Length: 287
Image (cartoon, rainbow, N blue to C red):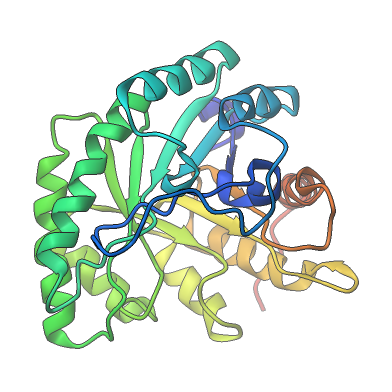
């Protein structure tokens, strides 16, 4: 699939990549002991969330992903305002990222999955195509995997008539390798999709792991590592080659999570250029 076959282009940006620009976070949680009051771990910020669609459009990027903790409100009026900002800028809201909850927890999974399900209405109100949820944070025992699968299957059914596709990610302790990730996806039988993340597993095993799971991915979080020399091009190339080997042809969400650039957009656009250059190259011959 070429970029011209992808609605609104090949690239998305997650608000995760714009922590410093956005400033405050609102840590919504299913835990009643935790407060969603705003915190500023990255400083006060310089831009409201409603300005981000226009900034994307100015940089030729047509898709956005919003972290739940970047929503200053989940009231209907604010969600309508944010949806209007997306529409005015011609930006597709690819995914709402629900950043808390543990469907694998032996004690709180039922509470958490009910809370996660409450975000389907938020995603729908925003016009999101997908909603990414955490599969689980517990160790990948048979009981924990089965518990997560049961809850995620139920969640997928809740979203059936919403127009929002539930996806999960190769993330946290429950899904440390392709074995558990594939088991979960097989068990869910298409009720929940996969958002593959290039940065959640450790090298060198991650390259073979990504080659395995990215054949099933609908979306991709394309996070690059940065070091003293800049973008770790060797690692990023191997991750993209793993995607190519797997036949992944969906969009790439640019994930920048480094202090290397003072302006986060510089890191985001460097990742974008790297992926564009990669896709213009001829695939390397095997052997």
